[in-house]
Amino acid sequence: MPPVVPPFLIGLIAAPLAKRVVKPLMRGLVKTSVGLVLEVKRAAHEAGEGLQDLAAEVTAEVVAAQMADGGDRERQPQPQPQPQPQSAPQDGAASDGQPKGPAKGRPPAVAGKGH
Image (cartoon, rainbow, N blue to C red; front, side, top):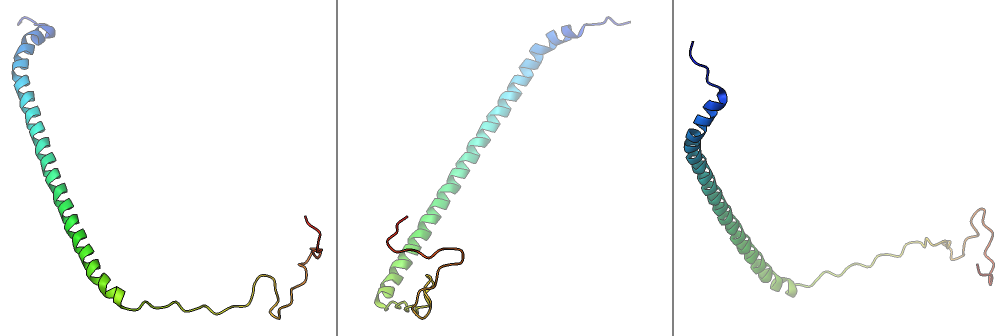
């Protein structure tokens, strides 16, 4: 029967070997990830600049079009609003000019008496 080696002894021997192998792998993985992140940031920044340039160009075109149209609009007469016809008064006065009587359940107002 082969001798039994405790697992912690295997760990003690394998740890330095694993450290020598895993550390460069992890370093390469992190270095690649950082490079990828920087590349994505650069691309996003360029895309943002492109959108800002496009927005500035469109704004300039719209302002120029408004300026060109604005001169023509000032020369044209503006339509005048039509006056609205007077409708029947709705503030409690009758259509014949006489005030209505007191509302149901309310006594008539007495002149000179303040509340």
